Image 1 (cartoon, helix red, strand yellow):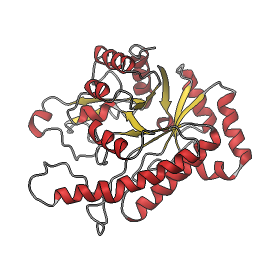
Image 2 (cartoon, rainbow, N blue to C red; image 1 turned 90 degrees about the vertical axis):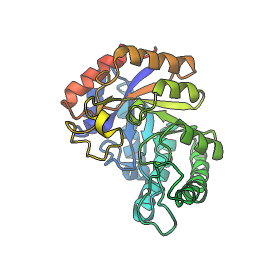
Image 3 (cartoon, one colour; image 1 turned 120 degrees about the vertical axis):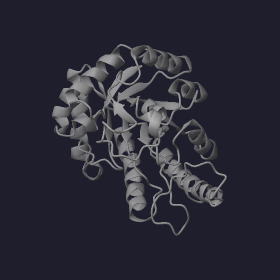
Length: 313
């Protein structure tokens, strides 16, 4: 395995300076956002698609540093009703086109989340047991059969036409794919070009075990995010894991995203990567630093040190 960095954490730096900073950590791989929710600080997708000269200059900055663009990220909600879904669908299609021009074979996305019916205007995430009230089974049928599966079948064809070999979907709360079983449901219904971007933090935050998930997902792990979460003792025992407070309210939340090693210890991380390697994954691990309890620099260095000490090389 090799270490990469999700570069949005260095959004304050211009493109070339960002690459130099990444190199200073001994990292030669980058995952950069090209669409979705991100402001895409380092990838101006429309400009790069429109200008062969700018596209060439973009590539040259990577090449002269001997760095690899391991994936383009377009995490958003293309299945949302109305304007948001249309915007994120368009950026997803453009990300694929840009990946094709750059020779990038893998994109990282989220599944999206539809509304609860054709008339709904906001996404609707069903998390309650489907027993009562009895409207939920039809909501789930609509979301999967009428919206998600048709959208993804069409999108996969577009991706293949542009040379994409892997679509790594991050399992994320408030998305239709949020755990291994929902990922496999989409993969089985659409195409094996779809796999998972296995982000341990999101499974930890819902009480799942990423190591067990890695075993279940053998052959379907296309990408891995190095990102940790901490269940906050003294709070989770009272309110449980369902958390709606903003991520900035770190002191009162029942769980938080933290630097790698500040949630699970290094022995856990070594076991996680060992099982991933044992089940066939030997690709990039992209550090995604979203710890709001410390400075960006401290979070990056803490995470780089922990990942260097634990990934299976």
